[in-house]
Image (cartoon, rainbow, N blue to C red; front, side, top):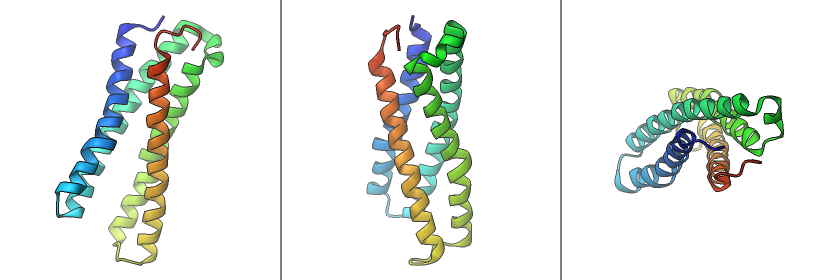
Amino acid sequence: MFLIGERLLLTLWVGALWAIGYLAVPTLFAQLDDRMLAGLLAGRMFTLVSFLGLFCGGVLLLGVVFRAGRQALRSTRFWLLLVMLLLVAAGEFGLQPLMAQLKAQGLAEGSAQAVQFARLHGVASVLYLVNSLCGLLLIGMGNNSRG
């Protein structure tokens, strides 16, 4: 049974992923002339969404395990939540510190740091997109008791 509290947590997490990543952040970069300020604000919003995701995803995953026990390992819901949590952790605790370190060194156009930052940013963007799509899959599963 997919409890109302779980629906709220999932909606909060996935809604925040989509609202921040695909509405707020693009709006910041479109409206602010200062790209450094837009990037700073975007980074803070992404960090908040990451911690929200770690909380919501952790509670949701515990709920699946609590209800299904070892059978949770056969649950699509379990694996999607686990993947989402791992993606959030990889982005927040793996990629973001590396990107911050590169920014602290300076990102002069064409520099090795700028090239590496762009690569890491691309990886982070792909992970965020995959996470967003996994969230939609979970929402689409709704009350499917087999999921």
